[in-house]
Length: 491
Image (tube, rainbow, N blue to C red; front, top):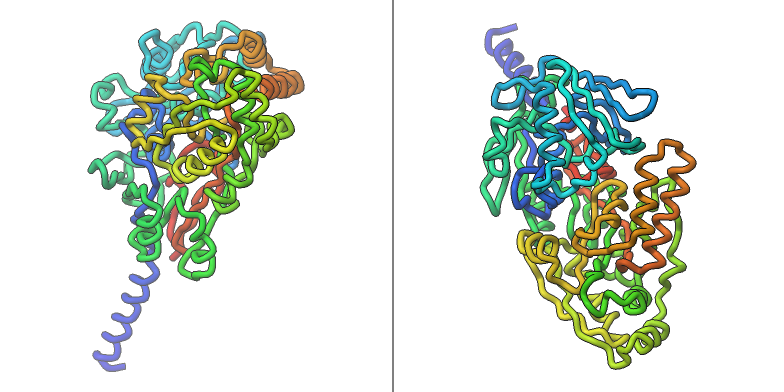
């Protein structure tokens, strides 16, 4: 073999080796941008979408199938009376700033989350914690005031991740966690960048860098995916385009379940919605299938209560609120609103809300309810609707896992106050027997359905459009997360 031929052969092998090297960066698009980067102090699902598991971790965590597995706690013991959980923490775990993660950080995180002045959006997760005690740096003991059959599940929520006191002052703009990726940069209105954490305690992710882009407009989303400007769009906002992607060999389309109960949220303390007859009339005015077909192009499962249909404890209560405009008009007349009334319908940015809102407004108009639409940006919605409770109606998808307990909180934004429901949930939280828990879950679903607390629309599907060579993406979303820890490119 001549020198030239040997050189050509070597060059060819080098090119082949280069071609076989898998890509190590990814650009992920989602529709909503986080309003801040503190999952323990904000209600927006977009925070968890970017940061859950990637940057922040809890004592336990959710897997893609919804199971709860060890996280920063490698194991735990539960006392015979079910009131004391002793967690053994993983050794050698550090925060991204180099400080050690230990039992003091766990105590700080849980005490902060349950404090009276806490801004945690899910304080109810921590309500049964009586005391958090540091035994030694690797051992923390959590004492409950009563048994809680959901405690390990609750500790897997994004609201329960472990944070460091050293970084808490700037956590909203510079998140410091223990996860497989470190926060690098956030260009608000455009993108957020993560870099692989080479000091990660667990298995190293295949990806070296990840960029999240925020694309709210469905037309722009379609253009970005088609041009391959993004590698994957999770929660693709234009379901009418999915058949086109399915027919294109460049892409894969994954359509999964979420925990997202999409509801017409009702301000139960604002007249006339403080009248159950009016709330029932609203529910009967709604044609769920028309909303699913018109706004979601058929992607979605009708629901009659605030519970996921894929959950084994789901009760089909659709019969409580069939589409019946005549009955809705009769109920309004009985409630003293024969001529109807006017209210507000404040909509956040997601397509299900904006598109669904137009359809619902038309359906309500048919029975005499004039819903005046106001489109809000996400930060405005959180401030005006979620915090200030300044609304009549709104549409939002509650993506937290098995979150029916929010109806036991009278201060929650739809302001439902029912002592019977509260007693059921208190008993359910304190019950560990699976059969009894299922029975109580059925009772809880039935109460809110028959009280027409909200207009229950559909369980949100999550369509993901990705490059054909991507592996390890979650199809279902047992929690609102784009978990990149197991994502890789084919070689």
